Image (cartoon, rainbow, N blue to C red; front, side, top):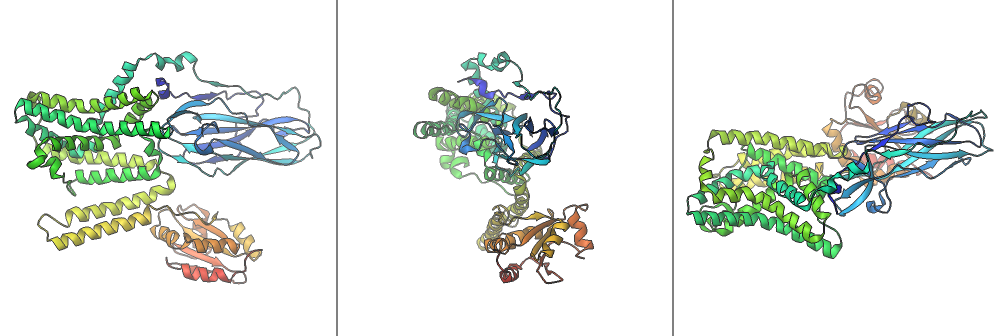
Length: 591
C-alpha cells in the first residue's frame, strides 16, 4: 500500500453548466457542518419534457459523506430519494466521482464525498400530466463524519416548485454537466515516489514530537529531576537507567503493536490511533481531563506519583521505577497527539503487518531518543536550567494552553452536548478545588475523608445530570401562533414549553419532566400539540409572545391549553411532572 492514504483529493464542480437557470438555489437546509441546497434546471417544463434537480452540498473542512453502499460502515452512505406526483418520474441520482479516504475504524480505503459537490436527479414529466404547479421534494439520508465523530442528522426535505405548462422549450436540450477531479494523475501520485525509509523517518519524527505534547508536561519536571539524580551516579549506572527508562516507553508502543496484531489476525481489522475521537463521549472525556490537568498546572492540587515510580527510596530508584516512569510518560503523551500519531498510524496500517509493526515501534524509538541522549551524555544535564520561579510561571502558562485545547475539543462535540459538558466542567473544577484546597497533609483523617467524599459525590451526580444525553421522546414543534390558534379551534390540546439556551432551570425541567417516557407517551396518545417556544434571543417570536400575550416575566414556564378552558394551566417551577401527567390522562385518546 502507499502513502496515498495521506493525500486528500478535492472535488471541483463546474459551476457555469449549460441548461441550469441562474445561480440562486431553492430551499436550503443547514447545520454546523453541511449546507444543502436545491436548484432546478428549468422553471417551466412541458408535458413529456425532461428536466433535473441539482442538489448542492457544501461540507465544513475535514467532514465527508460516505459514497459507496458497499464500503460505508453500517450502510450509512449518502442516499437521496425524490417524492412527487405520479406523473413525474425520477431516474437514479447521478453522483460525482468519489474521493479516497482511509477509514481508521476499519483500516480500509473508502469512497467519500467532501468539500463542495453536486448530485443530479433527472426526471421526466408524463405526457398526460396536468398543467399546474407541482412541488418536488428530496429526502436526504446518510452519516456525515469527520476524523473525530459521525452524526446521523435529520436533514428534513428539500423542495422545489416546478410549473408544468404547454410552452415551447426552444432549442434547449437536456444535458447534465460533467464532473471532474482537480489536478491530474501525476500530481495525485506524487507521494508514491517516496521510499519506505522516508515513511519510517516520518514515524520517527512523529514519536519524537510526542515529547512536546501538552499532556506530558505535568510529569516532565519529575522525569527531568529523575534523570538529574541518575547523572550523579556512575556513568555506566546512569546509562543503564536511561536505557531502562527508554525500555518503558518502548513497552507501551509494543503493547499497541501487540493489540494491533491480535486485531489483525483474529478479527480482520486494525488498531487505528485517533479513531477514539469519533466517539463524542471520548472527546468530552479528553476535554475534561485536560481541564483537570490545567487545574494541576495552576496549583489547585498535586499529582502524587506512586512510590514505586517516583520515590527516592526502595524500588523507586531501581530499574522497575525507571520502566514505570517511561511507560507513564508514553501513556500521558499520546492522548494529546491528535493528528501526529493519527497520520503515522494511518500509514502504518496501510502496510503489511510486519512493516506496520516496525513503524509503530519506530515511533516509540523516536519518543525515547531524547532521554537516551540525555542519560548517555551527563554533561548535557549541567546545561539544563536550574529549578526556580521560572518553572512555576511556565507551569501556569501551560495551564492556559491546556484550557485552549480543551475548548477546541468541546467545540468539536455535537451542539446538543456542548452545554452539558461546559456545565459539568464547572462543577468538576469546583470538586477538584474541594479535593485539593479544603484539606491539607495535616488535616484529620475524618475531615479529609468527608470533604473528598462530598467532592466525589458532587462530581458523580453532576456527571449523571449534565453528561448523560436526554433521549428526545417528544416531537416538539417550533413556536407558531397560527398553528396554536388553529389547534385550539379544532379542540386539540396544546402544550407550550417556554425555554432558552442560557436558562439552567429550563434544562432541569427538560430532564425532570419532559424526559420522562410516560409523559411523552401520553402526549402522543392524546394527540397533544407540543410547542417548544425558544426565547433565547430578544427578536424571536416566542420572546414577544411570552411578555405581551401571556404576561410572563421569564422562563421557565410551561402551559397546557385544554379544550373548553379559556385560560391555560401554568407551571413556573421545576417539579410539575405529576400534575401534568394527571391532566393529560383526562384527555381522550386519539382514534
